[in-house]
Length: 155
Length: 141
Image 1 (tube, chains in turn orange, yellow):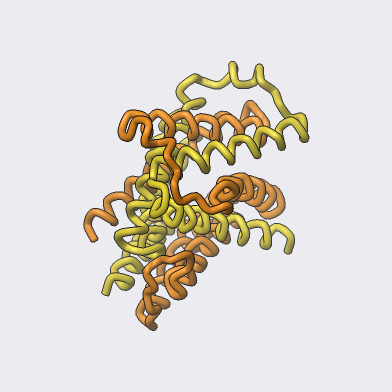
Image 2 (image 1 turned 90 degrees about the vertical axis):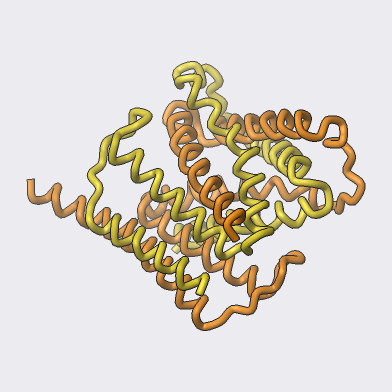
């Protein structure tokens, strides 16, 4: 439990930093120049870590299934959808929906044990927990935005 | 409506990435998974870049070198995400991840670190993060 939580929190901190760095790049370069650079850097860092920790073992891929080769393209889908969503809805509204969909789909994945995950029966308590989290996301994103607008109009 | 569909798909894809990575890791290892998916993602993005011709290579030079390395975090993000999903499941992983992500983003915004525009921390932000932590505690119960 503690190990899992530690790594989940660590991932969240790194995602936050990465988003800020990437935004700085995309302010100068276009969406696809930024995405190409970001994924290229991700490849180099993964390759380096893999070589340091596993050496040549990194290149032994005994039980590859065909879809593993295409799985990385999902990352490009993420960028495309996020950019389009934010363009059409504005960042605050779009990100609130993105985070909600992320959590909703996570709950669904656990409940059916998707792709060989350990199936977790979803109880009422868990639905309620996720609803409270989604409520928190919406208050954080939309509430913050609304307060900002109000204080601007007061000036 | 189109925007909402894109936003929902974007969120779903982020979770799909995590689940797919932890599935692939079981077969070929975590660093192999990270290396492979980042490489195929990079090649796809590069093809799109050539197609849309928004390649402004000289633009990279106007960005502080530190910010160009943001993508390199991916190795550790994928490793952490996969390890967390294998230990505590997808829902709990994404929930904890979002709390850490939104909290740090807000800390950075409210202090104006990395040259971002300073934003004031308001009551809804505290209530929102409080509710998210409460939700995780309910999930654990």
